[in-house]
Image (cartoon, rainbow, N blue to C red; front, side, top):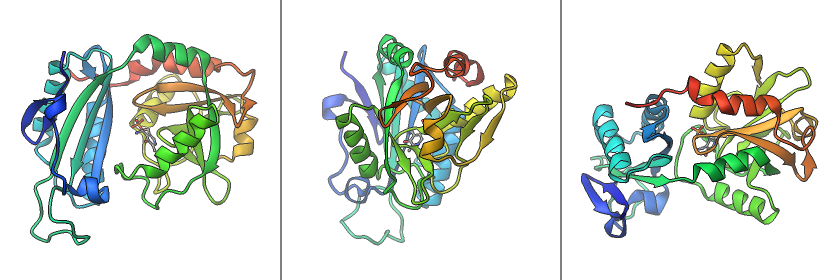
Length: 286
Ligand code: PMP
């Protein structure tokens, strides 16, 4: 069936959906987005995604396009109208459209809101998780506010493209001091020899992942020790296990870094256990 896209108050067929050519999201990346997992037709961790959306918009002084409750209705409508059971919901809010000018109009603009839903092949994703993915490291060339989820994604696009050309599916970005910040579109984790999970603390250098946050809840429930601290590429190479987290892949095992196998070169036992239990800690929308 035709995919339906919500754009500024209307549910439109995919081919007819569009935004203004002078939208500031298009011209300046003056825009925020969110990606939510859809599981059994329900949104995963919607409140946390809404919290982050509100925070990101607030940091750029872009108003919420509508109330949180109304936005939730739109999101659920988009899932329903597209009959997505397993997939992803994408939501974008730009500052709005205006004749091109770097200055933000003091009178304010009406934000542009786009929401769409896409099916994912759950079996393919499981197969990927069972095989594990490879990552390659590269310098983090992004800006100083990676905590804001903007559509200014060109560094991530180039990093993932370079990773793909190197036969890997994710790039781990490395800061000037040699510490891993995060993946190009995921948070980075390792498990040390004692079985302690390690991931970089939040701050301006990484996106505070919703999956990362929910995984902490699971770790607390399961009594699994973790430490929020930075780690270097060398430490990651010697780790017992490694994985990434994101709404699109939940907990995804990493089996090689820069071509060198992690642990025995297969997805880690703890990683797979966390993957299988992840949704027990997540909140599913009605
Ligand atoms: N870091 C970056 C740079 C990302 O793009 C993403 C995915 N949007 C994440 C981390 C993971 O965040 P989440 O768990 O909320 O999907």
